[in-house]
Image (cartoon, rainbow, N blue to C red; front, side, top):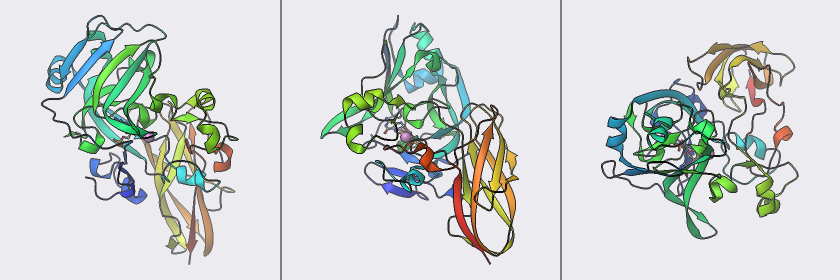
Length: 360
Ligand SMILES: Nc1nc2c(c(=O)[nH]1)N[C@H]1C(S)=C(S)[C@@H](COP(=O)(O)O)O[C@H]1N2
Ligand SMILES: [Mo]
């Protein structure tokens, strides 16, 4: 069980690290990695676990974890995993939403080891044809109107065939902890965490996205006028935009909101993430965004890394609103206010992150 984490709910387990702890290491240790579960954590035996690969494939497979490890080339990919609900607490400052009040810690960066889903699909004789979807099924169930429903999501075949999409058994060189999907999970870098199915037991190729509630109903971006009641109407959630790629984002990890600092030079640190594009600049402000200074960036070497940034602000005595915004390689930046992207489900908050502090 993870310690160090702020727990939003115990059953199902939903927890995130305090931001200063998250910022302490570029590679997030498993014990400090956020946990997002829709149901109870299944207890699975790695030696007996099976992965069934079927559907529209030429040669269905039934593999143990040891088969995956011996028959396919192992591969390690450094990637951020983040929940679509990361920073929901900031949207809830605008108006209530459904879902847990995640701060900026529903994100982490790990070295994932497994095999390419692509290699397994090709071994099963799957074709890369258009219009196909790869359904990823977990062993867990979630409660939908009082009935248990299996956790299932899907990824379009084009994306599933990217060799960075993994069937992973290890995180940072250690076996996956139970809460992170032991003994096997999918990792879909750059996509919202929901697609990275944990406790993975089936991969199914079909000609439509997964019919499950998690795929069809949850994790859709609804327009700002929709209420909780609207979001429960089938017609409305069918019209929602499925969340896959994640927006450019940046968060101040230190100091924390309400901090009392000494006047003078104040170190400010955080992370930024562009999910497959590149973070090229991070601006930090001590006056709510009227004036900005450029932060120093610590980059990784891969496509799916986050950026650690740091800056020193000169604080005069008094109250200050720290703010951060990132820029990506396409010259895009973040909305100034959470009001700009508020939605009833509380997804994809990517507004300037603002932290009130006082200096004396
Ligand atoms: N089987 C299964 N997979 C799952 C989930 C789940 O509840 N069940 N939650 C998803 C969501 S919404 C996220 S954000 C990530 C979180 O992964 P983590 O708990 O390892 O951080 O797992 C995804 N995969
Ligand atoms: Mo999530």
